[in-house]
Picture (cartoon, rainbow, N blue to C red):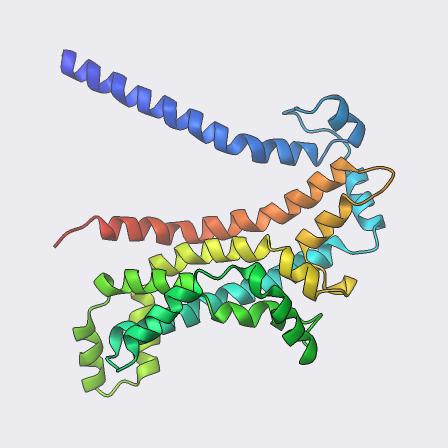
Length: 280
């Protein structure tokens, strides 16, 4: 009897802690959404409020009065982030497959070079990257932000580490004996096995590209090509007055797609964790 009561008390304590942690995680996002419905005066006078106000339309009007379109910026960010994520995930997995599944003379030096590239910060190569894009007339072009995602050393490293214990090369060799082509083997056999790893990295890659400001603000000078982070940063640049309600509304629009991507891909992460916990 005492054992059951102790077990019940322990479960209640765990649930209470989990609920508190969930509330602490949700609170900043809720405050941001609430502030997007409040006026600048309300935010300055009462910084914290959990009750939505009635100034959402006013904040939307402030966004629409700017020289850019938030809807266009939203779709620009969707194009860049989605394209970069797809290219990064597919080609990084393909590169990792080439390192794991094939035995060739320069395989280890090639992988060592990939690890060495991981230590080079993006800011170090930004000037040369901009000059290169300018010379080939790729500024104000979304491809300049999408195509470089194909070369992602950190992603290749992660995919290789996940692929080594997960992909059975005997199945790959059996498919080759049956006459399947290399790309068919990769697309039909390897990619389904790699779904949990791809989903996990897709979330991080999408979030990174969605929030990217440094390279987009350098390469994109056409207002019609601005992404959401650029537009939100410009909302803070008013000399006389900053419309905080409009800023929070822009931030809310920027965060919403991240929630959608996470909820769509989270089930694959859970499947990957459950699969990794099963031992043969």
